[in-house]
Image (cartoon, rainbow, N blue to C red; front, side):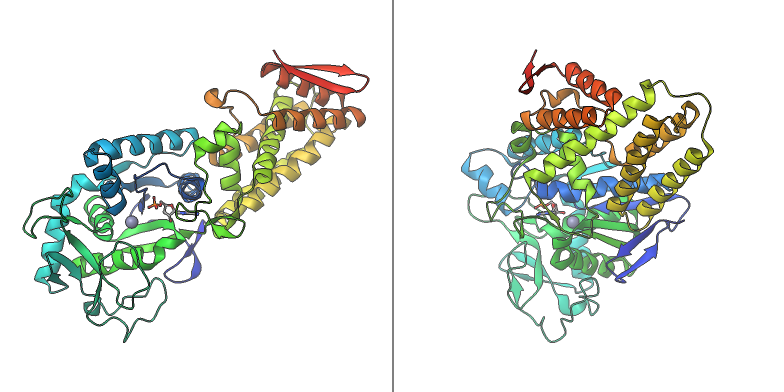
Length: 466
Ligand code: AMP
Ligand code: ZN
């Protein structure tokens, strides 16, 4: 079965293959490094990571570029307020972003590119757009005239005809003005850092940065461009207008967008104040793997409602997977192999892969693994699942972990939270009640490995850290 992805451009789920040879040339919009990223941002970056891994699972090589937006209004405002250079200010948050990516096991793109290192390329592109009359200047800034790009709206499926004459919006983000012309080059304001160039002192707009860096490193037509759903309009629509006006070619064959992470029904965002950074969550004792699991577990085209209960369940799910792996590696199983279980394992592998190929349906992929795990645990207890079945079951976990990547505990994760410990103790009690003593002993061992001692008393189980 081939990989299928939902393409925002066609609004269809289509079979995805790279246009040339076997390498996927893809661009994803990266963070604006004015502050720590929140886990809403990381929902989108985790989706990109899952996408990368699934592309590789399909045998494709990757040439992936992601930008770091290290110049914008907020960055300038904050850097000026703190008396820092842009570079000194953004270095802190760029590093924090990379650290968080590492904690969440997000693979780095083949090329991570900074906007401020491509100002010359942007000036050249804006100049070229000017030569072909796609721009106009006003008060030291240069704007893209959307009326010169009749296909504007083809990605967001908005019909802007009659709505885009003349006027302009002097902000990076769409601010509900009627006019959608946007700044390519913004005139320097008093006291702000700027670049000198043919267009006069100023700095680039946000949209031009992505077009220029994508075209520079990946060529005129990308295989795939991705980001959060908020970027469809105006950012990606503007990228298309600029890039296609420059090259006369389609900018990207596939556009793939992840839905939001929500808190109580609202988008997690800095401006609403309803956000958590990864650091906030780790400080509460959750592991980065639990965060990763939670972010990956909801298919990217569904919004993900963030709750701490969800995070706890993610931790429990990971424990179950790790325990199952431990069992496969250490249980003394009867010799031989059960044909029924050989077939069952192969079928779970197939279901797992098909679910991911089906527009990265991570929820179904996980369901396939957990259904298998539950039945295999029972079959191990009854002796039906034999030693010869273990290698294929471990292969299934390897395939699972090639995408989800949560089985190995983080060295830096430190201590387990009380809630996680208590959940495991409850699971141990349930295992004992079901006379599954092997499982109960495993949990004791697992807790002991983490420095937690259990004491069975008349009034229940007490625990303490060693
Ligand atoms: P920014 O750093 O604001 O440029 O955003 C980085 C990425 O995070 C973009 O791809 C956004 O679409 C994405 N993003 C922002 N808020 C959320 C959210 N609540 N849920 C999912 N993705 C988001
Ligand atoms: Zn972008």
